[in-house]
Amino acid sequence: MAHDLDRAGFEALTTESDRPPPAGCSALDSQLGFALRRWCAPVLGLRPHADGDAYLARRRELGAAEVNRRLLRAAEVDAYLVDTGFHGSELLGPAAIASAAGASAHEVVRLETVAEELGEVTAEGFADAYTERLALATAHAVGVKSIIAYRHGLDFDPQRPARREVIEAAGRWLRHGRPRIADPVLLRHLLWAGVDRGLPVQLHTGFGDPDLDLARCDPALLTGFLRATRDRGVPVMLLHCYPYHRQAGFLAQAFPHVYADVGLALNHVGARAEAVLAESLELAPFHKVLYSSDAYGLAELHHLGAVLFRRAFAAVTGAWVRDGHWSAGDAERAGELIGSGNARRVYGLTD
Image 1: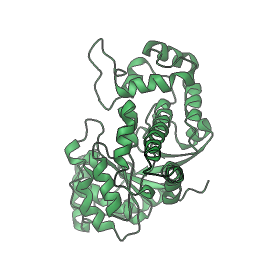
Image 2: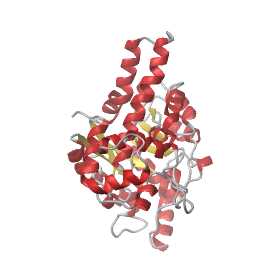
Image 3: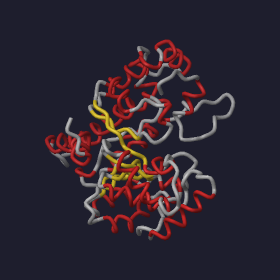
């Protein structure tokens, strides 16, 4: 966040819940909260495990700009991929993140947001207007993202909707005052428009806030869509995946254009990051797994994601090396692929 936060605002960003905890309780009493106090407190000049009151007081003393600078730089991330489609005006944009972190930053465009920000449009003109607007919005982007998992679920008809279906769905949307897009026909159209754009397509899968139905966010439900897009030459990036990260690993192995990460999970499982990361490496080829923090709102989540990934990867692969399953060289090569190389290759990052 670009501005200072009170305790309620800070705690709200450490949980996927959309409700505060009961009186006298704290959202920081969680794996994420404990990990945050352990690994972020020293970056702000506090002892590890400083209590929540001391941590928040120090945060206020330093101010948002200095907190962001310290934590982003401590993360030692070279390149950020930033989804600008959700509460973008309240958050640091790619340029501000790059400046604070001393790194590069690249935009990922949210498909649904582009549609909801269209100007005057008719039902008949919706598809063409969206194609034109998406081309403009992604002129300098490295990827697009769909949140069809939130708006509908991943159990959607995998085929591209017919033009007549899109016109009828757009007409319903316009007649109802252009609410947030949740019509499955329109969501499918936006997703296929993203495929047509040719950039990597990110798909939220697995857990998130209460807007989604977790049972309908299993990435295995995307099998039909993945078959339909297999020969398009467009990478499909399965984000987060937990608790379905083993299914995501299978899909990454089975389909040549599918990649996966467990970024959101590592922050939330904290001390259990080793277990989750190890499970994510069971089936997925190592050239198909990408590091992610899925940080939102708090600079702490950028730093914490990087720390937990590095520690978990070192612990998991170090044990495999000691037990003779891997060589040290193989572990180093896999770490370079997952931590950097795969993202640079798939997203075409050159800086």
